Image (cartoon, rainbow, N blue to C red; front, side, top):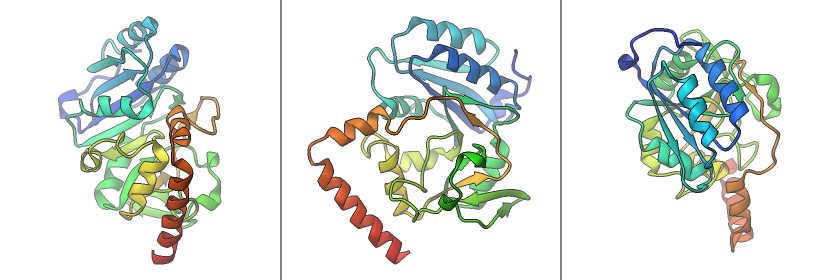
Length: 251
């Protein structure tokens, strides 16, 4: 389905989608995205972390009417290094991050995410995954609003790995990424969240978000497994837990 016609050059966000050898899910995700309102986007960047030649054909066919850049790693780099490679090509103020295993029934919630980020400097990411997917004890129960958009904040004290960052679909600021320099220097998602936790950053969730996860549930991603195998990880984990306990006492 062709993308709706609008002024791509006026876009303020780049949609970055990471993929790794799941062609069927990638096509389903891209097709569902194109049925949504894409206003606010300047272009797509799709990065494939496998050598599967089928992926390029899918991207070029589905995104034929959409400004886009397709990157394919010659060797598997892992999620974090792939994201760094894709983000290096971003030239917009905001990034809408996504992966190849999500379904968008109605909206990307681009404009809602931007308005919340603009009004709340301590928010790192605005997520639109359906709330039913989350354990409610991980969220503050109070419903907040920005410009009439209802959302809930994560509770960063619930878990040391959680609450201040996520690669789930949603809007984030490019300047926040640039301030870090690269995600690879920090590590996987949990390490990025811990880093931002000490900066007072928090993830928020749109109350009315409906984006659905279609991938298989996994307790650890390859980047996380690699971290767990590193020499000194147990000492690092203990240090993180001590830092987290201090965070809970001080904040």
